[in-house]
Length: 183
Image (cartoon, rainbow, N blue to C red; front, side, top):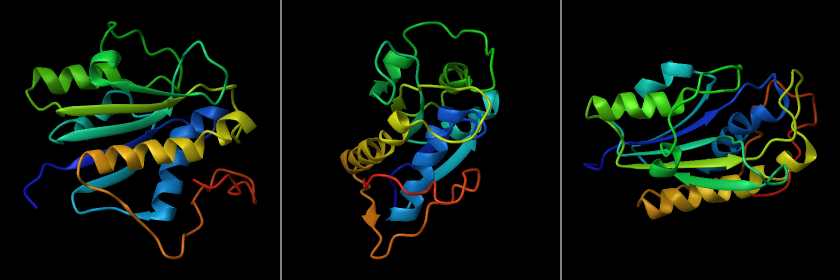
């Protein structure tokens, strides 16, 4: 396949409540779907500027994370590259603040930025220490999965649903926490 690779990455700290949203979505995607050649799906945790290698030399990048927005918890927000970079980067003050803007700007400066960027974000209810998604954010997992799949289809690399889905590998959750709404 000659098409440039596509990266699908989840960002977030699984030990900080709703900040585990990105990793949760990635685990559901991997459990329920098989991805086309050239599509890499990864949970990156909280990489900070270590995100740079993941945003360079890919044709498209789909990120899943929590986002700050004036909306109720669990609300899904979609942001394209220009919207993400509209405001200058701010200091990284907490463990759930990724270095996304800095990584995208670094990749752009090096001439290796993705042509397409989509951030699928959910508004968190809580991001303090502790495991487990709030009910509102848990309910946003399925819609976020749908948005990622929709973007992959738009990019010409649709995923295939597994005949027999696996159990999401949410090792950080309590037993039984993998029960979630269908995507």
